[in-house]
Image (cartoon, rainbow, N blue to C red):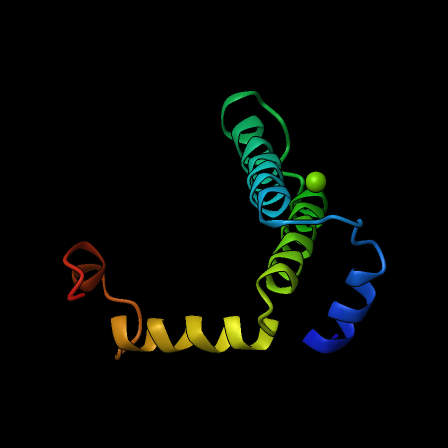
Length: 104
Ligand SMILES: [Mg+2]
């Protein structure tokens, strides 16, 4: 699914009054749910539940698109800016040395 199509479908479930605070709390909450699944696998004997992990990433994605709407930026611009930043940080691909000692 393309960004624009997802944005249209995601907006259908956006509540009235959505704002940056709701987005920040939602992103944190859904990221926490993702981390909790990994914690349960590593420390509590649970099977790694790939399907639930994918679902939680979807919930994070929902909030990313909600944040884009609140900030008035196209999701594709967020993606472009992120790739541009990473291209500057890791011009030859990921590099531990550049990760540890960031040039910027
Ligand atoms: Mg969730």
